[in-house]
Length: 326
Image 1 (cartoon, rainbow, N blue to C red):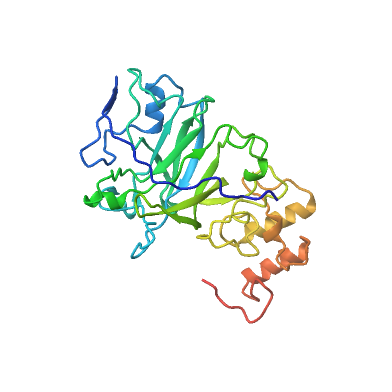
Image 2: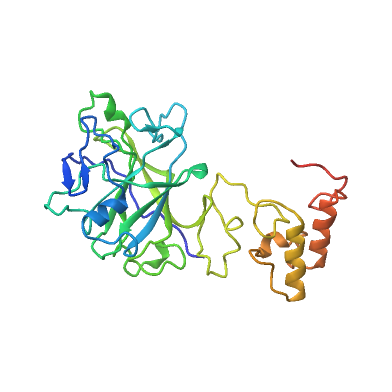
């Protein structure tokens, strides 16, 4: 198993705000330095600058951290300057990059901080997606919470800026593939990967007085699930079974098809597998959760255990009497 190690050191950067405009896309940051409705999305920026947001991008993901009561460690990203109508668990996450398509508008003006809006693709798990140019000239990106706190610590907004450090996505790991999730195509492509804040890696920023946090790359599976292995790896056992998101409960034994429930479809998947038949359309088998009795093999005994569980004759671990776990 290739290790996932921190490849980022979080820093609080100071970036001046400039008015940026381009044809059909106009960007006019407000005096409060926050993201506005006029802020273009990553896709809009790429297209406005002559790129192709449909075919010439890599997709990066980010999980917005949950608010922390008290926030003594400066971990909460959402605040009154960037709140949305979705509630306090959400804000408009932005992405900034320099170099490559979108870093300069057709008139040559550099992109304004806070960069571009990203897309909330999974509200339940607070997952945001960004399209980034895959042009070989975009080495660094920075996720942020849409707030530029500036340098004046007497202003209230100064305390509400949050961001990750520069994330190297092109040419950053030459030869050092152990720092990447297994199966990442090469050091120049992080397509389909997600950045997760690592609160264990922290240091105090002497300039701002904020804590800086490191981050790790993982392969993103969807449904808020991420892990060490691509779906093509022999070590991958389904997105729920392979998920290392601490917010998720791992699927319990018997959830053979990883649909978050134990039902007759799980029995059918085992029966089809043992009979050498093609699984029903849309179904899959997770060899980890299918091994209900934990003996290291998937057998008819596992299917029978699930049937007995569904009939309320025993618990999924085989113990009696049956106990409703709902």
